Image (cartoon, rainbow, N blue to C red; front, side, top):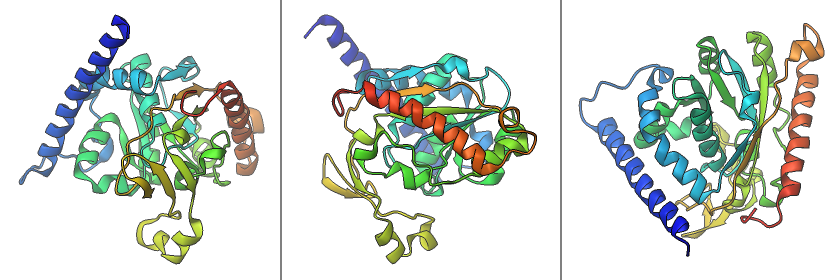
Length: 303
């Protein structure tokens, strides 16, 4: 093993320890009795200083463990509101979001307001809420989306949601946003450009066996937790998991992310863009780009 590899491995271990220590501190603060410092508005929890402190460790983890490659960030406007539309991968442990977020903040700096949407279930865990909201993660709902754009943020949305993130591993190169056109309506309503963001590798961090939509319907998970899937995965350390429970360690798949040229829906489709046409325009561009990234990969996980 070369000296350079050893140095990178040691650096990754040290960076991981520093970030873990910061996150433990956040969890302790979040669950301490009488703690009244958490903002009522999740957008107010965004903390550029926290991002600045933890970014070196995030970068080390992304580059060493996932061999991260993020391309064409120059396609994202350096200021002002923009809707980033991504393909969702990797179950609840979405490695490509982690990879993209650290690259975004490195490129634009921690003071470029950046928010990412996540399912409500994520915010039921005090530690996750305390750490993720500081990086800009907010619950996925219309009010938060509108508020983020009104604050001139870059807003990352995943229209495919749990449907797409639990697609089978053999569909890793497929865009499947389930025909959901809400992102197009949001872009038109707020008159903001769309920058598609495509990623590959997340669906190789485990062996995803399928979405389990019929089981979810039988168990009425949508009524109980707004979840329409009940998927199975194979991954360490437990082997078979259901909805990533009781837990899993992501495989070190190579993650590649690419930001595409921005799309102005009114410029391309007229003053009143049809949501279906807008969906087709954006999803087709994403599929072409994802196919290109997929064709570059020679072996699963290895990339």
